Length: 143
Ligand SMILES: [Zn+2]
Image 1 (cartoon, rainbow, N blue to C red):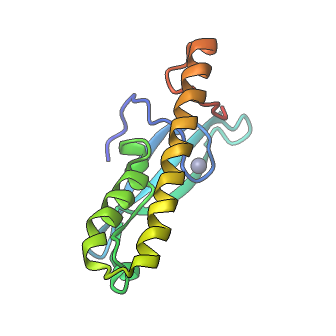
Image 2: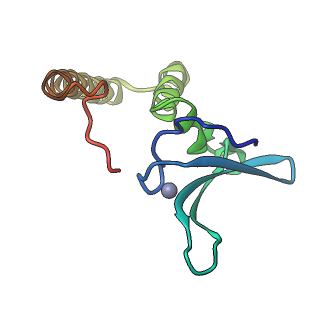
């Protein structure tokens, strides 16, 4: 992957700002690495970097017995919260095949209502934080 001046956002593994992304191929899979650059070491002159391995785009080996295709952390760099939304969509699509009895269906309905209430609460908090700070996400981020 060529290096570009791009805002890669924050590392899903350590939370620090990503300086650039690297990738490598192993077998038929592409793996991604978030690189954090801390300048040049004054003694050696070498770049002081820390690398966080984010894994491949998808984890097939885990998903053979699982209704979801698990995605690598790289997906969240491409699009923030991409994995959470993809997993939620996959769960919703799987519901008709789950053969839920009445009790389990009602239990799931209660949980989804709880999720909906929490999301409305987060939206309100984010809106308030945005109004106070001018930050478009409304979330605090580690530098
Ligand atoms: Zn990191």
